[in-house]
Amino acid sequence: MLGAGRRLQSPALVADGYHARTDGLVSLGVLLSAVLVALGLSLADPIIAIAITGIILQITVQGWRTVRGHAH
Image 1 (cartoon, one colour):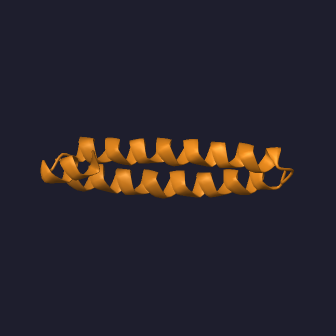
Image 2: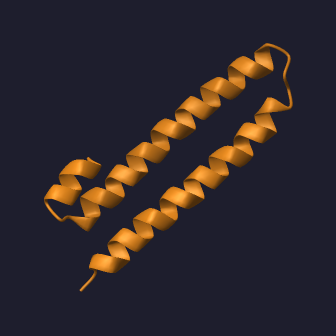
């Protein structure tokens, strides 16, 4: 979606692509956290949660800049 949004110069599609990427990364993070906690590494849960928060913030800022930069 990101590539199509850039080709079409559509800030909305680019932002949606960032959102889809965030959803995928969060899902992988939750799965990884569940596996590690099941293996007895309970500290993995808060560490992965903090990492996911950072990724979400970074992608949110990218999406905001993309949409803001193209707003008329």
